[in-house]
Length: 84
Image (cartoon, rainbow, N blue to C red; front, side):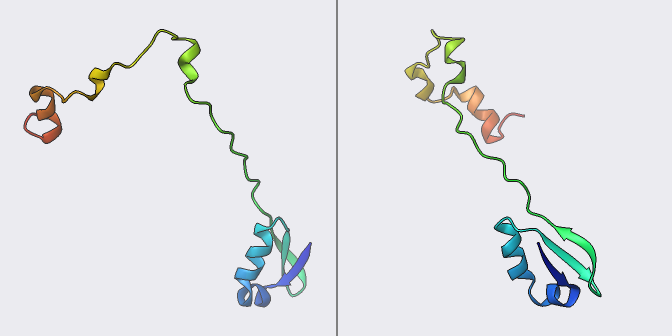
């Protein structure tokens, strides 16, 4: 754990934050008396979610080719602002 006085922190803030980012804890002192501690946040590990989570619950669900058909004019009018 490295100790830095306030003047050093003001002068070298980006370098000190780079050390914290790497996992180091830094103590800030005022006249060599500790007043604060900067610690890195624990980064949550991201887990890849599998595609098709509901596939086991709805094994017969299929999306048909009609999904790519153009919308009917009355529904399309809501998206273009003609109806409201």
